[in-house]
Image (tube, rainbow, N blue to C red; front, top):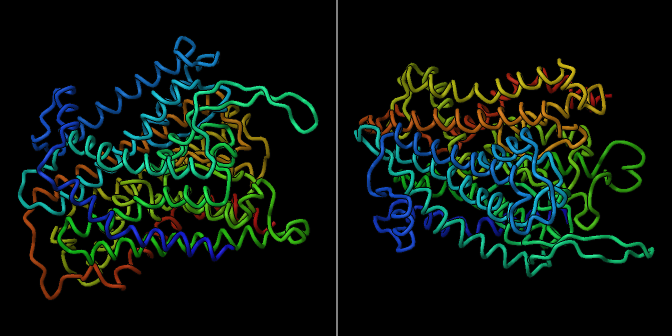
Length: 549
């Protein structure tokens, strides 16, 4: 079963890779606007044909995102006055701040129980809308970076943010989410506007069960690598994920766009081999994580796990250990954060693999858009290292990698580790942070490390043993999410602007081939080494020492 579902998943991803990648390339290169898109531009009062420099592109993105934070914050604070609020209370200020930042940054970290704290209208108008637009922002940045490689001497012009955002929502996410929602409905995921319904349990007691528009939100939650669950149990809840079939569909939705965008990259830069090289790196790292996590959970240490045939604690038996491990590898290898098992109950090595997947920068395959531009930044580091070895000026796709370019890349690489390590240090060194740790020792450190790795990488999953529904964690994790999202985006767009301003240099005999297996291995090695040099010390104090104890 473990091997079978992986084979089915890989076959499905391979089947859509070529046509979907080509379709995405046509979406972002077509000169035509659809009628509904033109209506949106008139409503926003923007000129979608006006080319923007990287600074204008960035300011448009930041303005849109900050306005989204304010709107979502207001909805959270005033939700008791909204229709279909189900009588729930408003979020407190720190909680509303955390939720607004979380969904706008594509993190979808949830300190609250979805069915107890969010009404239907907030779920649909606030959270589900951000699932679409935050995913579209990530894809737009990736497309802008591709244009930076593609263009030559354009004074740093990268396209139009409003056009990219609108096209992504209208032509990509909406139709794909609609198809995904129908598929989930067919497997038993619910879709209604019911409030709490009284039902009788098997022992004769009465329980109130909440309905809601779940299938529509579940589809975009996975497709946009968002992750916020309609229910507190997230994708372990039978209303969100009722069967092994729905489980496999949701994993497919998580991975399909991140694994397809490299194809779009290859087409748009005019060398499809470059796309194959990038997807090979992503695939190698992800398959390695799947194998390690599956092994860790199916051969869990301890007599109980061995007698049961795997580490069953915290897992839904309808998915099994293998289905839970595959989902965990998918959600931590991307910026999704959805869970179908309790990650806090993963074995020590399994939890370590999940943390390591996020600490890679979520590039295997990463979130929608973020995975591609994150791995391209690491590819530039690999090109730079190779150039130092042979004494040549590094070049990638005809763009020279000089001091200023490497400064931007280095700042990008350092941003996430700084946020993770500083945030973890503050939490374990202060009384307010220590108060949320339920289990001291290595596992307690792993819980805090996981939380800040998840927030800084805009993942959203958690070792839920950590109590984060406090002003301290809501505020600090909100800052980590905000900085972890927009500082890297600013650096990526600045680099894209520099590349677009450069003249493309023709390849020569001495140019490093960036489409061959040697380069694939080099990029994968650089990715792992960068993480290893940065995080092995703190991992040694958490999941590694816990695995050995």
